[in-house]
Image 1 (cartoon, one colour):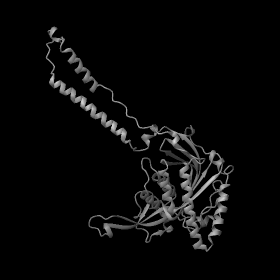
Image 2 (image 1 turned 45 degrees about the vertical axis):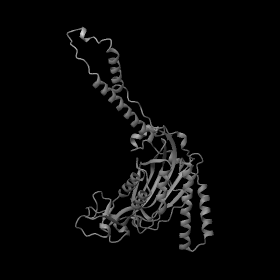
Image 3 (image 1 turned 90 degrees about the horizontal axis):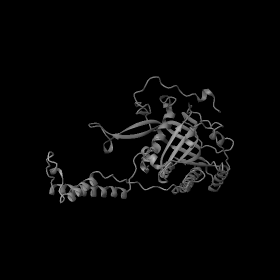
Image 4 (image 1 turned 120 degrees about the vertical axis):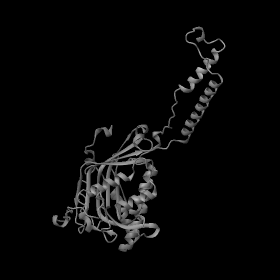
Amino acid sequence: MAASESARAAPAALDSPIAGMDKMGEVLVNVADRPGYTPEFASYFPRGAGTNRIMQYFSEFMPPGERPTHARTRGLVRKFFVPEATLRIQLLSSVTHLAKTYDFPYTAVPYFIDMCGRNQFLSMRALFGETDEQRWDPNVPPPSAPPSYATRIPEPVVMGNTTHIVESQHMMQLSTMDNGWQVQRIGMFRALLTPFTTVEETPAPPGASTGAHGMQYHLETRLRVQFLSFSTLAQVMYVPTNTLRYGLGSITVPKDVVERIMQYGVEREKRRRAVDDDDDRHPKRAHNGKDARAAITSTEEAPAAAHEAETASSVHDEPIPQFTMPAVTNTSLALDNFMVPGEMMNLLDILDSVARLQELMDIQLREGRGPAEILRTFREQRERESHVRGDDFILGDLMNISVPHALFD
């Protein structure tokens, strides 16, 4: 690392709680005097706060039973990322040993999350093994990733304000698809975080002074992501959907199944009422137990009694039929070498192209370089990316990650 220990030493955390900190220790309320980057409040977020923030992000990313909506994903990204953030996803193929890298800016991240929900992803969870977190001086640019993690693709430039660096070389993502397939990704991740303040609004209590629409405004300071990177190698496995349903939240019952259940209930009720009406028309005769002959049913009454008993038994004792959900064929999901649905990979390429176009315009305005020169730079970077091989420095590390063997069975 280029910075010295004194240069990167972060201020010590406060020993006593502060009035503006919430009970969970995750947000400062009305402590900052302006929105935007506020790295001077890094001391309020001790070591471990960055890891907790990443855990919270994954718990809200694609929770089981909740389909992402664009409004929800935009709120999620605003809650966890700074406006200049970059989400990097590097997919490694165990077949070709090649890597495919996507860099999504802040504005493209909601579309990526929406894309997951629209391409048969039902839920996505993350588990972490050994996680290392260090505090960093916000006046010094953050260091590059360690050699055991770094790829040959340069990272986006983060000029400063970084106060927390979270890294893990023992990460596992478990994605569940609509048809019961599960994609398990093992790999590494790296996150750069900084305190960032936003203006938030809440409903005003009765009698309080309010702004427009009866809302109160305040400043919230949270740790937010500047750069989040994943390098993952995927394996696929199948688990029957019926086994997963109890752990995936609510599911939609097809309309035809509901109609069959309702039709069965109506027919059963009709048969029950018919039996009750027949009982009213033919009341049972009282029998004297002491007289054996009075207990014998007459020849004329025997067929009616037998029919009555058979009808009552058929209504009250018949087994309830089983109503099954339609099975989903496992061939309905086609995954490529990176264990991503083929249609989604095409959409990722389109989204990446749009992000590159935005980057091209930003570079042209900032540096004054011509579009042709910038496109040549992009092409050279793509050529380097397509030839990145993980045999020596990535795939070897990933294959040695210690995870439960049952996950691969």
